[in-house]
Image (tube, rainbow, N blue to C red):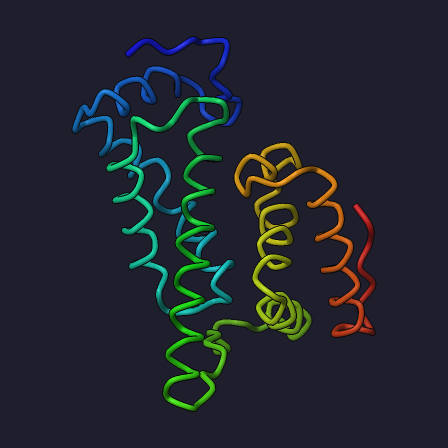
Length: 189
């Protein structure tokens, strides 16, 4: 399979076009390199998207399994990181749906899993809780834009939505956070 170097968006991945080509071709060492390069970053993203829950390792493994199985579908219209982000967002959405279904069936509400003992700064803890409580689609854009510092264009590619949809979601998320965190000032970006 031939990859057009001009189509590869690897600004955050020096030398990534060679790795991407080898990964798509199914080279085992390339997959190991992809896992080594992105596992920690994916774990941080999944941790934030799930609202700081304990399912991070399982979801990250799912992301890499899906990526391996569907590697030939990667068209290099975005960076490998953006593609992995899209998979991670979808896996987190599935995890949330299953969790909510279990809660409904069991008739109990799960408490938000936050590692409160590791959080020493109260303001940081309040922000984390507020972000974790946002509806999934709003939390996704907040995490990707503010915490992962992804450009809006990459967020659009990862989530499959337009720039205007991202702007609307960010606006709604900021409004909800203003209501939840009235004493903290949330600056428009």
